Image (cartoon, rainbow, N blue to C red; front, side, top):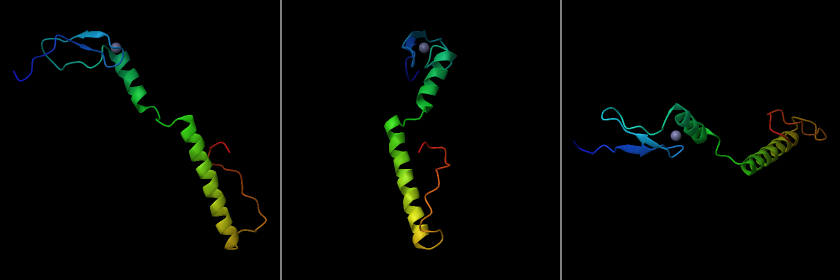
Length: 91
Ligand SMILES: [Zn+2]
């Protein structure tokens, strides 16, 4: 035996005691509910509301810059206003 098996572990989600059986893999969670909860926690977007606001502001600035470049190139009339953002981000 390389490692001694623990008699119990603490659930990776709710910290409840989980009995470790004599054979098989050592559990990480007390049950499927906790396994799933932990998965949802880990896959949720790490971006905060402030991050989203900043990214949206960057996006608007970028669109404005591109719009000006197109106007200066004569591809669109200079007096044509920037069209509303259709990307789904709140303007
Ligand atoms: Zn649990």
